Length: 234
Length: 122
Image 1 (cartoon, one colour):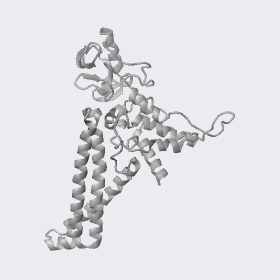
Image 2: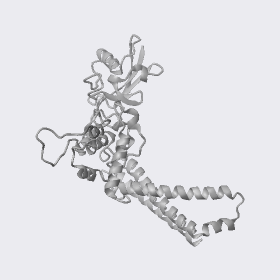
Image 3: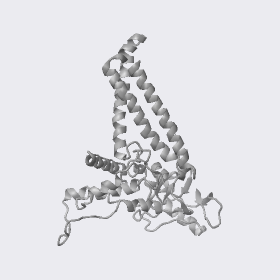
Image 4: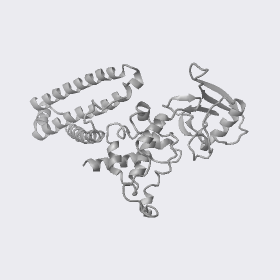
């Protein structure tokens, strides 16, 4: 029997959050953490969490799994369970709505700030804006982000200043548009990032790189943004 | 919300660059001091004073003292605006941060003047 300790909080009935200890019979299978949650929910339907695609694409089920942020649907028990114990908590640093569900408004506000859409002030071509294979390759490692918030909520700078620091997820996407040959708003984008908080609160501790379930590297993208700001300011 | 009003250069890029340049100056200064001490085990006070009395060492030492001042202020500003905020410690966060910033600023300024006095006046 797998020992599971799960964060519980229902603001309508609980004065404060608590950890609930439960047991799950996994039948010896190396299932995903989400499967364990589904088994638990079968026993106690009040257990609350987000989930959707169950294959690491939608980014809904980001949570803190044995102390490390990750997606429950693609985290094998064998990769995280030690001493037969699984501890599940909501993503750190964001307000808890209920159990493992967090309010991601601050995260999305930062994402919105970087204007995550292509901006081009030249006349639209007849068919489409073309890119060379080399230009397209610059977007690899950037466009794959699924906005699960595992990175930003593992970043202390985002915990302390979530209203000012864009956070690794937002900055990865900021660079995704800065690096896009079809985007012409580079100057405006850089001007919006040139303050003491938006980018420069990153101190390169690389928690974001450590937890990204898609294997992306926000720290490297932030480094590229710094270089672009430096070249712009020089 | 935390603002950048007490930030050294009002610009993240400027502070980032200043912190790196001052870091390089401090690395050079400590490397030279370390090397000199390593090469002169039994050093007399007169020898030590003569070493610091050279113009190039005085210039480098002044640069190092100023570098410590700006480097420390940028670092402390980051720490204070992380931990001493209304988000972290409640409604009085900005007042407490203002007081802590003033204490840090006065302390750094005092050490800088004292350091310059030692290096330049002797």
